[in-house]
Length: 59
Image 1 (cartoon, helix red, strand yellow):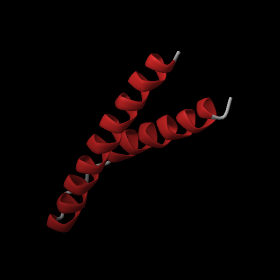
Image 2 (image 1 turned 30 degrees about the vertical axis):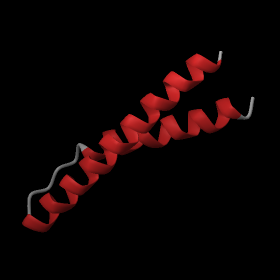
Image 3 (image 1 turned 135 degrees about the vertical axis):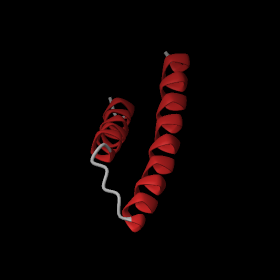
Image 4 (image 1 turned 30 degrees about the horizontal axis):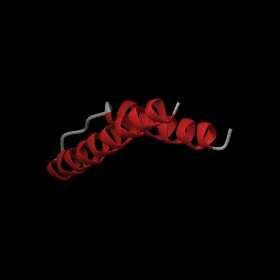
């Protein structure tokens, strides 16, 4: 059970880092003037992963 939680934790951390990099790229694109609406998908999945980890950790 703890190995599964550890693997899921690594995936969540990886996805969070990916979302942070993607957010920085989106910010730079916004400063340049190019709009990109795909950031909502990445950040929504990140928030859902963190919420799932919080709920799963309290069960």
